[in-house]
Length: 253
Length: 308
Ligand SMILES: Cc1cc2nc3c(=O)[nH]c(=O)nc-3n(C[C@H](O)[C@H](O)[C@H](O)COP(=O)(O)OP(=O)(O)OC[C@H]3O[C@@H](n4cnc5c(N)ncnc54)[C@H](O)[C@@H]3O)c2cc1C
Image (cartoon, rainbow over the protein chains, first blue to last red):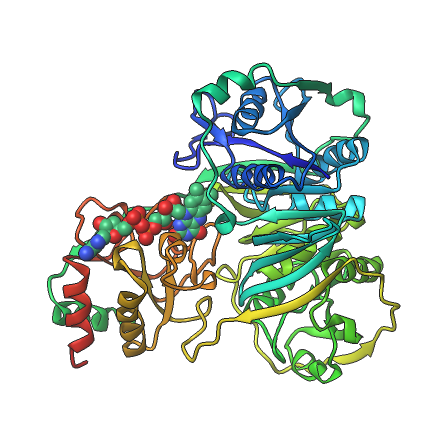
């Protein structure tokens, strides 16, 4: 069983996004970038399957400019067998529909039976790409998973999904796509020797233009605005009585 | 230019986020229909009572009790021939299905709409809500989810006609096994007026009972940080934040929560924020209207003992 793990390079999740007022875009020049945390969890799950003998090969895929190679090297250093880099000329504004079409192309080419990916990227927070991909290639779909149990004959997987009302358990027949939630596993760090080894692992580059996929934007960002957390005029209280009195006055009890 | 509302049911009740979707959709079209996928035809009654809906379209089949996303998305995509908009409230229900519908229709869906500027221009959050983007779509069919905290929840008072659509069930390659549902007598997290939320500072599942006690005293819902859920103090459906639920109650009382960007993403629009924390530098405190800098166990014991 071949596993494909799409990974995305994003602004480090612990960094505050800043807007460039001139360009009306989020300013990523010199910003600290990282692999999307949900993608790290997806990589970890694929590696566990490989280590348990259930997977024949793990392949990380990412789309972007040359800097994207860093993220693929991280996946390789974590332990993925090989990487596919879909190279774009400039910072194209690729949207989930485009990404899903590109990934569909690669999955068909590789004949992968399982795709493990993050449920959302922490930059655009769309929470769409896995679902869209499953629609395009008609794979069964399990979103927001926190449990993944492959059947002994690797023909199906039992998943636990974190949904608004609790945990839903479903069985998916392969081929399937799962999108992972935070509590599925604890991703490993790449050790120094593995970072060195990753440099010699196979990394194939494919020009996006060679795939013949229409990437004209469907959505245009007209403007962006920092809306972060506005500081409030905090008032100190020091007893239950004081707190209840304040809350009563504010009329929120 | 009609709009279709995808109805999410909690039992036989229409969910609060669906009611927000109706309010939002009235900015897009005067003509709203509702789509219900269900195994139980009697669910039509709560939907036809919704204000603002012309026709309730129902697909009733046993297979729709815990519908497969593969089946649901195909059925919805087929109904969309007659509509320009598909609108649902943001939830794990809609986020599971709508993007797949989008792919089937070759449309780029728009997630978590917070404001409708025109029929093709919307405001939505990026970067855990630290950036709000105004986006314009060029798709002919527009598929979107809307934030339940950003729109009024429309009420009842309608009397929509009900039309049953007979559809053959697409084949499914997955099956439902079980649902481990959190049952609680307390107000529901996303619609509660008051929330008492606990973080890692609580230290254990046993201690988290102090949060529950305070919540009951205030007739509040319970919330939690990711750290509290990860540590097993409480189940996943109580997590507030970028990857949990988004809330905007009148009162949000955060106990032993530091205030990471990802947590603030889920509660920063709360009307009054109270922070109980012993760290004067916790980022959460800057967001607070009231801060009680104290050991949280002392504070909770005092609050729980206090005669209101
Ligand atoms: C991709 C991603 C998504 C995430 N999504 C979410 C999300 O949806 N929701 C979410 O909450 N987090 C999310 N997180 C995690 C987030 O970054 C923080 O790690 C988390 O919110 C921290 O939880 P906490 O505040 O309970 O714990 P901590 O940060 O450890 O804070 C504990 C607080 O308790 C206080 N405290 C401890 N003991 C006491 C005491 N005795 N008395 C008083 N105060 C005390 C401390 O001073 C501290 O401020 C996400 C992270 C990532 C990377």
